[in-house]
Image 1 (cartoon, rainbow, N blue to C red):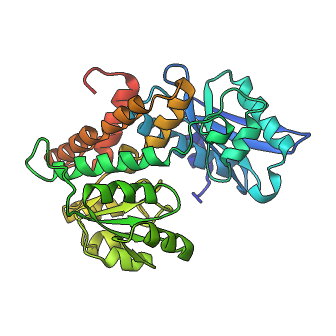
Image 2: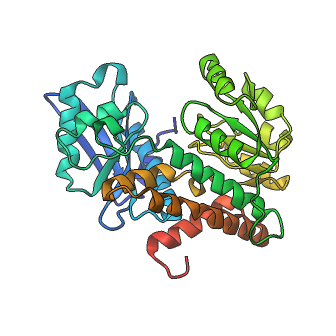
Image 3: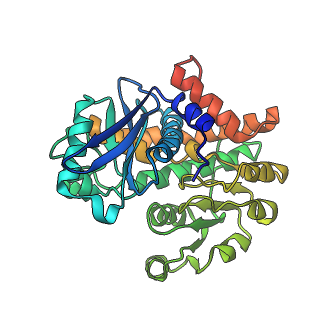
Length: 359
């Protein structure tokens, strides 16, 4: 949890277009919503259910998360800005029907400026309850009238990001994204990881996978007999690889891994991948191409927005396919100008948010 000072809170509150603190006395609902930016009149993003110690702590997180959604939306070409919300409380106890209905009425009152998607502690089933009071809900399971899981599209974005990263590390302007025989480590098998493995295997990549869950490891080994499955993060990060794909929790890319890992490219679906800002510096020092997470993991945003617009699978896939060129441009610019890739990616995303020509 970020340190909360008056100065830090004022900085956080000065960043988004709007911060809303909401509550409902009868249901016990209380929380915050950060709308970082609206494009085409809307923002999009998840609302999590988490037992934050204070409203201030929730604001600190949501302002940063909503900005990240704006950046990934811009780089994915999605016609929306970023929004992120938090319902404060233990998800095991606070998610009553009354509370979810009250939250739905709050989102409905915004008139479409914020479109709700799944997030930590807020499942597709929970969203179906919210949708009983709100028309601005997406990311629903097919059983509830939605387009199904966004994870396959998230995985496809990572695959295209990998192609772009490998092209950026060669002289090829195209065609350098062939993944045949490329050794790829996939961290995390609960969400997008298995979908990414499926794509990589079809490409002829040599995959090593890891998850702390024995059940998920066993299921992966049974589904993909040619994949090597290891049981610890350390074992995966000590494996000699061409690419490493973090698709699990936050902060698993440490300075130790960046300084010693045997890898050429890092590109994954996880949010908050870097344990500290110094990790990217360590990658750069060793000429390891680090793809900023928001430059390749926006497939979920595209999927959820498509669901709102009338899902077109080919259009969604074509949108996410642009990550290949975007990542290649970011990484090559970073090398040419001697700047961190994240700095270059943020600059590009901000130009797109402002609608500058040629961005």
